[in-house]
Length: 190
Length: 201
Image (cartoon, rainbow over all chains, first blue to last red; front, side):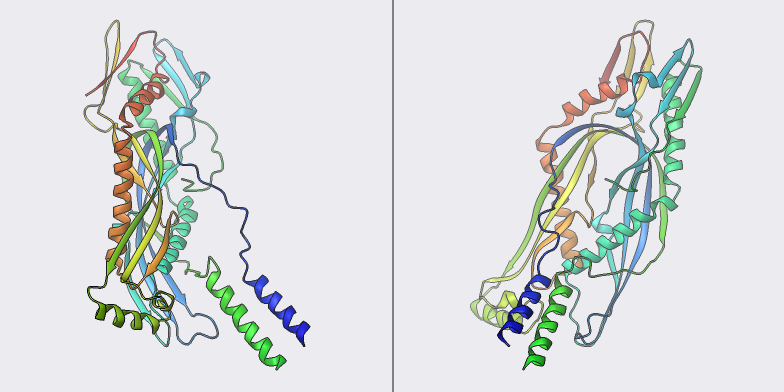
C-alpha cells in the first residue's frame, strides 16, 4: 500500500514538472546598425474567437471575441547589397536588390478591443493574463497567414519605384532593377 | 482507499496540467482582413531592443476597506492566493514588455532630395527620428495580476511601456549614429566618382 502511494506521488510530481526548463534562449538587448528600407505598410485586422469549454471538472463555459489590428511593414535590407550587385555603364545602371521580406510586426494596444464576453456556469472572468495569451494566439495566426496577402509583391513594386527614382535623380537614363531569389522566411520574423 | 487515492492523484494531475500548460487556449480559425495599405519609404538605420517593466498599483484607502477586500479575495478563486496574506495592496498589475525602437528617416518627406553639380553630389535628408516602437502580445508578459483589471487599464499600461522604451531610446541620443549609418547605407548605392555630401535639414 505504501509503495503504491509512493509511485502515485512520484507520478503526480513528474506530471507537474516543467518540460521546457533548461533550453531557454536568452534575448540580447543591444543597439544595432541596420539598413532597412520599408516600402509597404499593411494594417491587418482579425477577430480572435475563443470558445473555452474548460476541463471536465469545470462547470460552464467561457466565450470571447477580441478584435485586434497589426501593423506590418515589408521592404528590403539595403545593408545586404554588395559591390558586385551594382553595375554602371555610362548613363545606365543595373542593381540587384535583396528580395523583400517582412521587416516589422507591431500590435498597437489601442487597436485591441474585447468585443463580446460570455461567461456562464461557475466559470470565472477572463484575466488580463489570459486575454494576453489569447491575443498572442491571434498574433501567431496573423503571422502564419501573412503569406496570403500581397504585402511582399507590394513592397517589391514600391522598392523598384523608389530605387528607380533615386538613380534617375542621380542622372541615370536607364535603370535596370533585379531582385535576388526569395529566401524562405518565416513571415513576420521580427 | 486505493481507489480514493488514485482519484485524488488523477484530479491533481488533470488540474496541474490544465493550469500550467502554456498553450491552453486554441482559437478558432478566423480570416484576416487587410484594412489599409500604405506606400511608404522609411529608412531604418538604428535598431534599439529594450525590455521595460510597467507597473500599476492601487492601495486600500482604510483598514476597513482592506479587511473587506481581503475577504472578498479569499472568496474569489482567481484572487484567493492574494487574500491569504493581508496586504494594503488592493490591486496590482505588472507587465514586462520587450520591444524594439527604430530610428531612421522618412524618405517621403519633401526634405529628402538629391542634387548633382559638376563636382559634387548632395543628398538632403530630414533629421532622423523615431519611426517605430514595436511590441506585440507575444513580447508582453503579465508578471503579476492582483485584483480585477479592465481592458482600458491594461491598454494604458502597455502604452506606458511603449513610452518608456521611446524615452530610453531618446536618452541614448541615437540620432548621430543614425546619420552616420545613413551615410554608409546610401553612400554604398552611389557609384559615381564624385564626392558625396550628406546634408541634414
